[in-house]
Length: 212
Image (cartoon, rainbow, N blue to C red; front, side, top):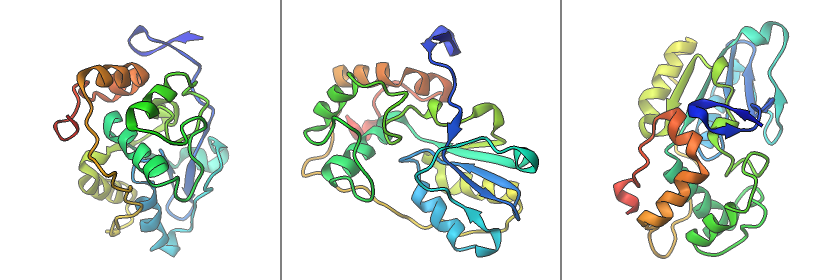
């Protein structure tokens, strides 16, 4: 164990990442599950000239050789919204396209959170893993945010010099019968689970208004 950001005790940084690499474009996209990965991948699919190799479902060490110097970018999302999206997709939507996180096969959103509280989030399913455990922050030239996705995507395109690439809307999560409401107690539990994500990325620990 090591003491990291803000004195919080964490595990050593991840050594393998979910990467998409373009040799013609000389860039690396570091994917974080439930943060517009399907939309961004679909955008790159529309540009075969960039020859983006997705490596879907595989974790890779950071590239060596010339690829090590490529421009790298990633995106993050408010931890509350990301967790709700995961529950809607993997529980309400019955895990479309991929397996659900182990031990959280069903139940309400609060039951989902309770299951995560007994899970080692650093080695669990990528959809609920902390974002700080999926991104090599010291290697990123740009870190965008889901909350301003279109604007930051345009900034990425400018940074990479690839022109304007339309960003489609993909993999919209299933809608539960009743909207998710996160009370103060449950909100505090989520903040404890994802403390580093809130602190490192500067997200407000107050539950977003639309989820109250």
